[in-house]
Length: 99
Image 1: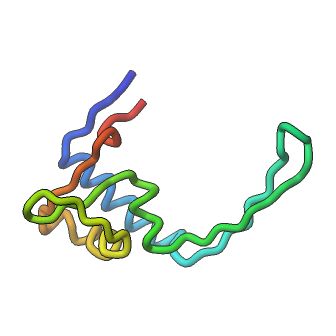
Image 2: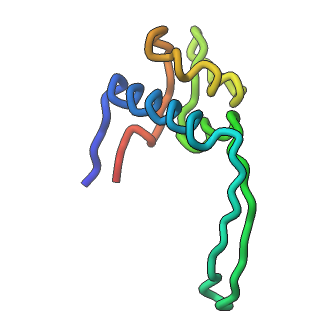
């Protein structure tokens, strides 16, 4: 069953998740090791979590005062934490729903 969040609820979730991302993941390099189910081989990839990656993980777009999408991911992370107090506009698209 899908649950739709209000903008206020979504904003709270996004800002809390941004704090956790900044505290636990930002700047951290992880090595993911897994077994490939197709060929049964052990494989790996390395990933670093940068501030600019947070917006991609949320699927949220930050809007300027005219309603235009701001395309700068670094700007998004830098401004998402104080977003709640500034009441910035954002577009959640399909991300306002949980499956």
